[in-house]
Length: 83
Image (cartoon, rainbow, N blue to C red; front, side, top):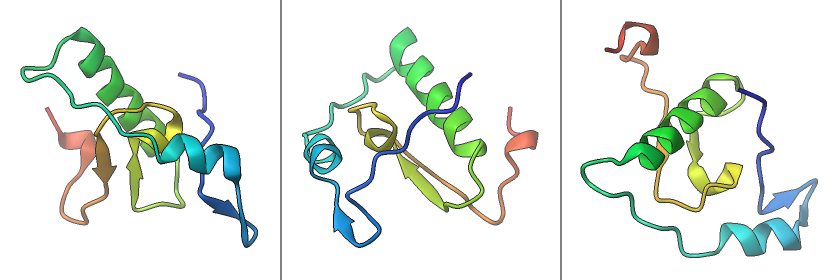
């Protein structure tokens, strides 16, 4: 997958108005059980997050997916060993 742009509320001490507006939109719920699109969104999140070494967590809206998904690092969890 390609590297995804990460949106931010601010950069260099200044508010990034366009990105802030997009980040403040109400995010959609994921269907349970996950459908094909939800699974794709979660896979995209994991891929985008694993390419970063500067964050402990990532929310889907930060990479342009307006859904309620968050991923974070846990010092006791090894993604490589996950099923």
